[in-house]
Length: 338
Image (cartoon, rainbow, N blue to C red; front, side, top):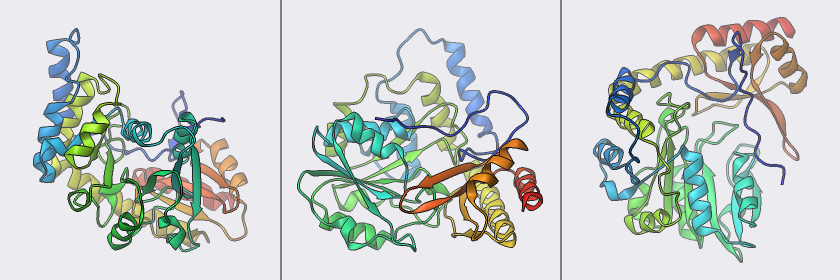
């Protein structure tokens, strides 16, 4: 297997970094205080294996019971746990295409097969995505999707869950930036799971924390295959403080959405085709300018965006929503290149 290749993480300063969908702003001030308290108490003891403090706080915010939540070392850990639990060797994982490229790697690690069902050109899902198949054990649906930032409706997701013979995980890594979410859907259907990340909307990519919402009987099974202490004491404390500060989240979200609008309009003014995004990035394709040389020229000028090439679909530039100044710098450089 080739393995998953993350976006570039330059180890030197001076880059405008718009390639890995990080939040450009610092997290809630409550996070630093929570981490300092953990350090004051010391790190010589193992952390809570179930991250109970976070489960209780998140349950209060989301209107759930803590038994409906399982925590992970980033949402990638959640995806790994779910794949490990449901997909055996030779069995099948289904995913849309183009989407998050880690999904396919997770299937390969399991010795499983992956079936990629192409999005329609308008980024909707055709009937084939919900069709039962022999050995189909799990379906991943990123919502909002990457690289497009587009979404599948709640109604279509409920229809999918009814038709599929296996669990359906809705990957809402970017869900806090969207107009709606699916966190309430597991209550009505045991097959639906919803995963969340703290890397994007809560600005905690450097600490690694995520969680999944599912019915308690499902959570009980996932616990059996997770690593013993998959979340450390610092990340548990940080995430608990972050999720408690919903006022910070609301303000940060508003800033990101305003800049996303500015980025979208700016790229369209430069002649790019930009699908309307519900995430903290945009997908940009120019009708006459090839994407890869644009990416390379930007990198030479120390502006990092993500060049992504999907055989059978096409390529383009995925640009993260940074600060207003970072976005303006990217637009100015592209204007000069074009």
